[in-house]
Amino acid sequence: MVARDGLDLQGKCGLITNHTGVLRSLSSTVDMLREKCSLTALFGPEHGVRGDIQAGENVTSYTDKKTKLPVYSLFGDDISESEKALASVNTVVFDIQDVGARFYTYAYTMTDAMELCARHGIKFVVLDRPNPLGGIKAEGTVLDRRFSSFVGRFPTPTRCGLTIGEFALMINETEKIGCDLTVIPMEGWKRELYYDETDLVFLQPSPNIPTVDTAFAYIGTCIFEETNLSEGRGTTKPFEMIGAPWLDSGAVIERMGQQEGVILRECSFVPTFSDYKDSFCRGIQLHITDRDAFSPFAVGIRLLDAIRKTHSELEIAPDITKLMGTDEIFKEDFSPDLFTEREMKKTAEWQKLSKNWYLY
Image 1 (cartoon, rainbow, N blue to C red):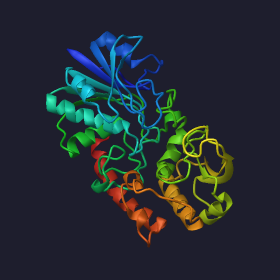
Image 2: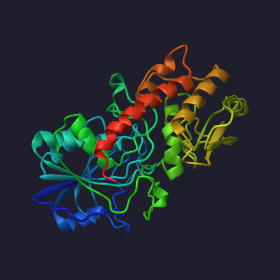
Image 3: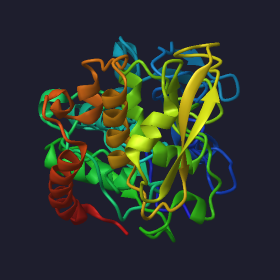
Image 4: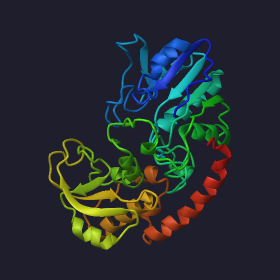
């Protein structure tokens, strides 16, 4: 499904990639590019080139044992060395599997690199990949630029419904980056396809997105990272479960009522790392029954609001505004249903615009 023909690479090349940068056969894009160009350096996003680093951890530069190529990190507090190395090549190739969520950082590693390449006159090539959540539906909030950060850079929805290549094309034009950009499109992908409906093997894009259902739930439950609940890290179902020792799961589920496309079930878990490590948590698990009907963002917002109305113990950190792209959650008269209805209209307008960059 992923096309790699049509690559015409001259001079020194750099590759921004991780463990998801593979062909249908699961052979590495690194090996493919070494046959097509003078590949001189590898660059990794959050979680590293091997995808084995936990969220938020810095990665230092090193030499890849197999290829003997230098590896630089584009995620961390100081990436000046990496940016200098990136500026020394003639072409930069980007090949990483995204998950279709605004707060997933790979897209901003890409757009930051595009900006650097634009400044230095370097060609930028994106090897396109499927959006695991399909390309039909967009939802969530359209980010308010006041809350722009590395977990949400541009005024795009929480779930954008674009492939990483389409996103690159749109941002390059709407943000006036001016990068010499080429997107190598896929063959055979259709917008209605979820990742596990393709002929490709799903490699978890990061340590806590093990399945396509996790990626769906992540759209709604990532906001719990900025609360005093566990978002399920340290379990086998990250983002599909949330909880805390003090949570009355049954009361919250009763308050929520029936939700389309998902069943909320009482559960319990003990995280092996992250929040509430080694502590018994009372939790709620999201069982997705109909992906087409399920609106993960709306369910996540309703869930947060239901917990807030049930528990005085709930704490919401100010940085949740970066994930939500708005500070509406802190308003005294906040209504999750009115909020999602308003944002739905903004998202619909954004999606009309985004169709100008559809490749499929």
